[in-house]
Amino acid sequence: MKILLVGGGGREHAIGEALVKAGAELYVVSRHRNPGLLRFAGEYGIAKETDVGKVLEFALNWGVDLAFIGPEAPLDAGVVDVLWEGGIPAIGPSKDAAKLETDKAFARAFMERNRIPGRKLFQVFDDPSRMRAWIDDFGGPVVVKPLGLTGGKGVKVVGYQLRDNGEAKAYAEELIERDGKVLVEERTDGVEFTFQVFSDGRKAVPMPLVQDYPHAYEGDEGPITGGMGSYSCAGHLLPFITRKDYERAFETLKATIRAMRKEGTPYRGILYGQFMLGKDGPVLIEYNARFGDPEAMNVLPLLRTPLTEIAEGMVDGNLKGAKFEEKATVVKYLAPKGYPVNPLRGTRLEVDEEAIVGEGARLYYASLDENFTILGSRALAVVGIADSLEEAERIASAGIKHVHGEVFYRRDVGTERSVEKRIRVIREFRRDFEPNPC
Image 1: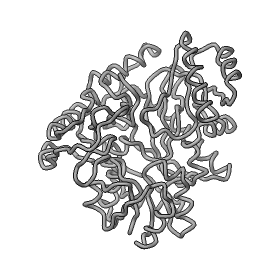
Image 2 (image 1 turned 180 degrees about the horizontal axis):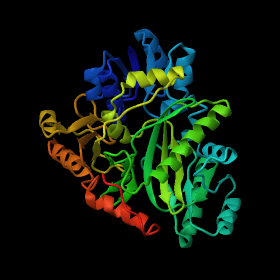
Image 3 (image 1 turned 90 degrees about the horizontal axis):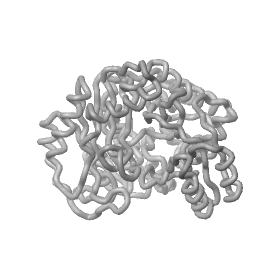
């Protein structure tokens, strides 16, 4: 099968690897030549991933059988619609279905009218005085968000204590002035987790749960990034997630897929729910319309079912299932110094791939060109896979020692101490909670 992969980041490197492992002949279109994907690809086209006409042109010229869309921006640009219209089946939601991620106001209203479990109180404002009055009347901590895509990094998604709602109002007013509208919703405290599923428009097939580390610096400090690393457990749950929590979060995603089909916008592709486990159970923080990055690098190396088989099932509406190895994983991203606020660009990384593999680790390239020049975002990820989380973290840390350059990473990703910190948060409102082994 000839498959076109759109995108050139770490997530796409992991997707490409899984497709090639499943026997696909790979073709790639992205803004830069990813060093890892360059080795897999039969052809590699350079174009903006949002230039949907160019993507279709490459697909037709190469005669591909299927396209797999990695990032969210081309989904928002309607690349899936254009490919299907051009006779190329595509993995990813249509432009309208992708609004679950690309339009936060749409997503919240969709959840409300369909009574999707895990929803939050919210309001969308275009008038600063109404926004201020609502926050005052609400009388509790709020979160302020822009409505559209933000790339997951450098985002001022603000959660405020009640005493700081004046700052929340000021930020909301800034967004109204900039974007015309703003989303204000109740704040939910707890621990975040990622739940990803494959969907053929009717069925949801789950992947192992993952926990991301979005803050730039150790101890969960600093600005929000696209994700500095993540971990998953051998049992496919997380230490702080009960089976009941899992089923409730899964029902949110299944109900979402049912409701999208009922509304005439069937959802095909990967649906990713970012959840907060709070005192009342899992609450949906936001939807994403594609694999997470880094979370794709946790789940795809464990996939035992060929990704080509899953891809065909998603586009044909006949998705059977997906099996994963029962292993723990730890992903550690290396980012350029200054990331995400003022990232360094243009310097080269020295990467001893043989030594990294010799440590038992895997390597995924991201914002790095074929000359190993840093392009300004997360550069590469090192992944440890083992029977235990402790061993997976050790492998990832050992592999990182063989990368040298103007980069930094979070040493605490996947460590016992950082996981215990999250368990303590849950124990504040579940006194008798017993964590799962990882």
